[in-house]
Image (cartoon, rainbow over all chains, first blue to last red; front, side):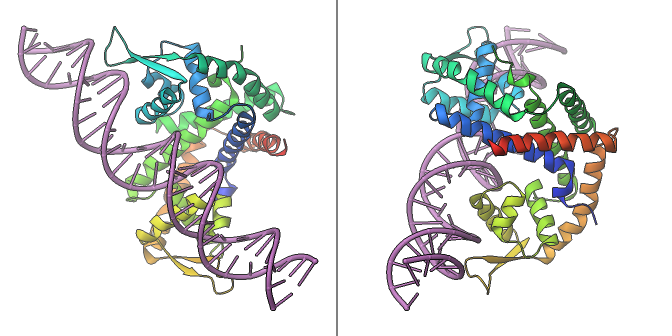
Length: 145
Length: 145
DNA sequence: CAAAAATATTTGATATATCAATTAAATGAA
DNA sequence: TTCATTTAATTGATATATCAAATATTTTTG
C-alpha cells in the first residue's frame, strides 16, 4: 500500500503555502478592504513592470489567460486599474494603476513585509537557501518528464 | 521597496506545489478518465478511513465544508461514491466507495507512486527531512500569530 | 424537560482555475 | 501581397475556494 497523501512531503508543501496565504489574507483584511492576495500581487508586479501584458502577468502569477482576464475585469470595475489598447500591438492592452490602486500599494508594503518576516521567524538564511534548492529540484523534476 | 513576490521563498513554495499538481494531473489523465487530483485524494483518504465525515475529509484536504459538499455531490453523480445518512448522528453522512471507485483506486496506486518518485529524483532523504522541518516552522508561524 | 448553544451539512453569491473554442490582430512564407 | 500561422485576449462551461447565512440535528445547561 502506498503512503497516505498526508504522509508525503507534497502535503506539507501544500499545507505551508495554504497556511501562509490564509495568514497573509487575514492580515490584509485588517487594513485593506476588498482585496485578495492575488489582486495585491498583481498590483505589485504591475507597479514594478508597467509594460507587462496580461499574458506575462499570468505567467508570473501561475495563472492562465482566462483567469487574468477575469481578475483584471474585476479590478477595473473596482477602480484599481484602467486598460488601454496598446498602440504598437492592438492585440494587447496597457494596464494603468489608478490613484486608488496606488494608494493601496503604499498600504501593502508594510503589511506584506510584516507578513513575510513573521512567517519566517526562527528560520535561518541558510535554511531558506536549502529550502529553495530542494524545491527547485522538485520543480525541475516535474517539468522535464 | 520590498522584494518582488517572485523573489521570495513563498513564491518558490507555491511554484513547486503547482508544478507538482500539474505534473500529477497530466499523468493521471493518461490512464484515468475524468478524475481530478483532489477527487483521487479524497478516494484514497476515504479508503483508508471509511468512517470519516465530510468535515474530517475537508480538514485533511484543506477544504472547507462547502467545497467538500460539492465535490462529493459530483463524485456521487459520477458514481464513484454513495452516501447514506449516519444512523448514530443524523447530521452526518456515511460515504461508501462504489465498485467504480474501487477500480480507480487500484489504478491510482501505481500512478501516484510513480509521480511521487519522479518528482523527488535526486533529492536525499535528509534533504526531505530538512524541507519538512523548515516548512513546518512556516506553518507554525502562520498559525500562532 | 425546554431553550440555548454547538455541530454537520447545504445553499447562495462571488472569485478563481482550467480547458476548449473563438475573435482580432500581427507575422511569416510563398 | 495574400493566405496560413501565431499571438493576445475573450468567452463559455464546469469545478473549486471562500464567506455568510440557512437548515437540521445533537448536546448542553439551567
